[in-house]
Image: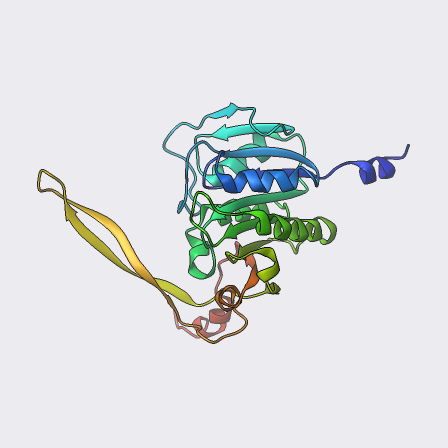
Length: 263
């Protein structure tokens, strides 16, 4: 049998990770879908790592533990961040580069400005840095009892498309799914990241000893209201949003203007 035929018969190798922890309901749903598509390796944080962004562990030891939870090819919990998990998987655990890296399903939105804080999406971005077609999935439901049945269908559709078509070099997908039944979702929209940010406050409180402590609070402000090409518009209008996301953070549109500076 030729090498070409063997490669055609070989199942896709899929890396699964997240930021909510290896036993979170969202990753359970994601693994269930990926098991139908290929051979699955799970490397995920041993505890919740939400809001870690692209953090890596450099001032503490990192530990991985082999676990048996999902009955897949390999499963490890990692003491580090979502990005650490991808680095470990690619450099220490997997014998070849995966055909797909999926992260999630996150409990809560990673649309708009949330993408830069998201551990879920940073894992996908790290996959893209490694040259792996990568997708971050999020459901707009923070509940531990969130219903992932519609999300699983969306995940399968998009993952199959990426496995078939691939992605442009350096690009991953940020997929956000509205909190709806499957038949209530109008479709899937390729979108841009809405221009928005959090108007934040630090809520000051006092402990029994009278010492102050703080909770970060705030409200989401969308500056692209009414713009129908954004992820926020898509989600508010019952569509799944898919934003092509890159790790190149260069503001290319500003280079020409700044080049006029006399430095």
